Image (tube, rainbow, N blue to C red; front, side, top):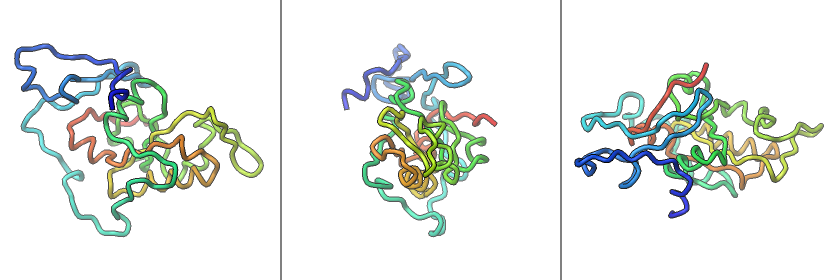
Length: 197
């Protein structure tokens, strides 16, 4: 866990009421990440009366399609949480991929995420460092790591993307799955921005 915090560009708000501030961790108030539009600060909402809005407060969606997903969508894939997502965003060691359909991405996403809808993931591996081959894709060991996420533990879009990417030749050990997705990100009051259209 200690390694997770190294490499984060940390902006700490020093005030007498620091204990009352809503931080990411006890010692990290915000993290500045690079996006296509320039640097952007990710922090938790400071509104202590903030509440989740629709659709994030809904607890029961019909299964199928909205079935609880396994902790790991495929062998070799590593499941991660918010601090690891922030570390990847800060370090630039991974591509953050929003696996949801485009309108969901455009409505709001994690800063720094790109849109690769789950039903396009296996066809867009060229954007993730793979080379096209007659039989599909060649994904060498030096392809960047990918962090996949979707709506939350009940959303099958990013797990489906992970399995399709692996079947198409992307190395499973280069895939990280943020299972909490937008539901957990919103629940924690972390910064959300509209996805680029």
